[in-house]
Length: 73
Image (cartoon, rainbow, N blue to C red):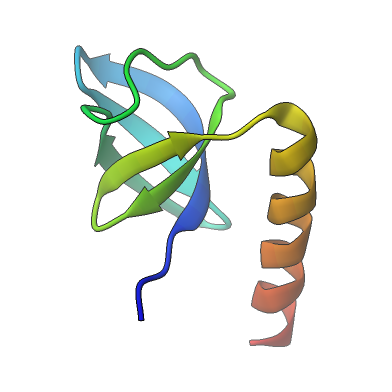
């Protein structure tokens, strides 16, 4: 099974690289597949690559659901 996790972009670290956060985890992710991002964008990340940029209304719901999952862990 593959799992993509929503991350929020915190800083742009290069042309195809940014630092993003999911819960308390911060990591560098590649942005080759989604193009240019802005700080605050929410992206789905799989294997260190942003694979999709989410619309604001979709990202709010998905982030809330992942927060619920983390709270139960």
